[in-house]
Image 1 (cartoon, rainbow, N blue to C red):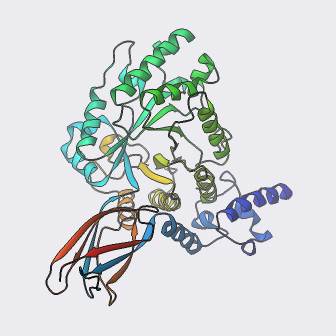
Image 2 (cartoon, rainbow, N blue to C red):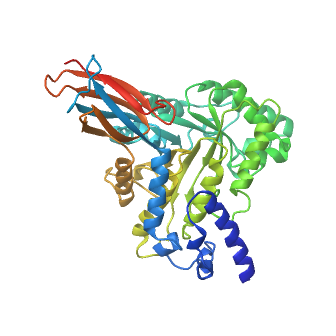
Image 3 (cartoon, rainbow, N blue to C red):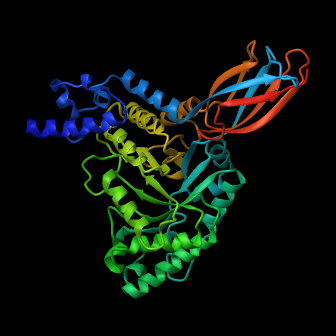
Length: 455
């Protein structure tokens, strides 16, 4: 038994070493038992999250990765028209947008609640609909399509600059098929599914940031059983040909949540993604990785989350955490504190992977029917989860800052990647000059931003 544990430890260690996280000297045989799987871990203890490292070591690594992947250090160089430096110029830096999106699940309940609309629009730049774009919702009976709720929700999102994921075109789980769909022959099923694809994708072509084409097709195979092993790849091809400029996602659960789920391990996720792209006509698809991230009541394995995201990041595709929540055993006295603690560690670990382009919280307000995790109560007052999200939203943005140029006319600032408005003000005359710029790893190669102001 001990030999097998040591073997698993060595594999685990190799993956972490590759990410630059630890050195061999930090591991010894006494630490082997701390690598138990979630089912073997007893109780809820913060040490379980970090051992054999300290919380400070995890935070230090995370901050280093954030600085490398999500921030850019810029030199603002302020000069007069004759190229001489402006000493003491005030430089105002205003963040307009972020390259990272905070999102939230949304339902049709938002449509008739003005306060909820204001709350949602004030916080989030991305949304994932719970049910309103799913086939069983838009066509419960054959030939009777109804997109009223989805239309209104997408219009609301457009009005407030909120990007929307198309969740989902089809779903591979048999229990979420309409009764009439289950009764169809393979030939009729293919016709009905193609009609569904054409209907929803053509209706919202170019308006959505991405499509979940075949939801959860690692765990389920409704369409493959009836239409053949390439059914999912075929539908990705159909969506691609209708809406070729939109990112198409696989969307799956337990790829980061549960080390014991044999169906959705990161390696199997990437294998299925490769198979979809290898299908004739699919090589040009813009693909993305969708991870539902429904964490259960068992202790969280941060090591597995880190290793999974590191492996998935290596293919260079955008990663979205699409339905993030944390379920806690309701019988525990400190369940609220544990939920917030685990959620924070999951969010911090996820954010330090630059390939993670968005995190969608599931769900926002209790009026939206959340049964696992709510950010607010029915009065839109924050829960402890809401307080945590607000704290991290503030921490992970540059916001508005003011700096002063030195004797060489230079101000050095590290900012989160995104779009900015920068204004330099003459310290004597108050004459100003402004520029709007995009900050990321490639837009400003030399990291120097030049602004001229009049004397």
